[in-house]
Image (cartoon, rainbow, N blue to C red; front, side):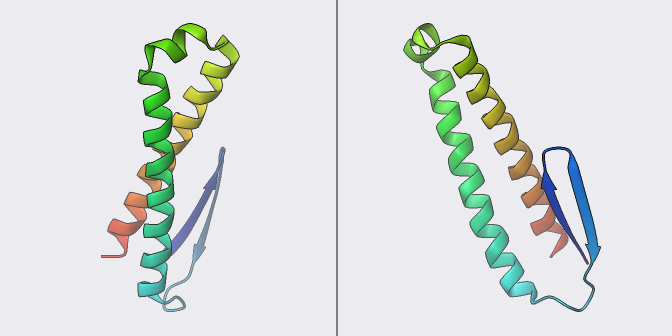
Length: 86
């Protein structure tokens, strides 16, 4: 089993075969997944709001798009890790 930590463009992989509590790791990942999905929903709602897009400065909209992209990447990463724990 490997633990993969991802922030920005850095990925660190550690071989933790036989050294982790799978149930605890699954709970931790599920908690992280819920937070990432919440961020994804929040950013999606803002970007779907025509009034927000019309009134917000371009820099703010770009920042929200970046947050949405990062939340999607995090959701995908965590989902893959959960599948690997099966």
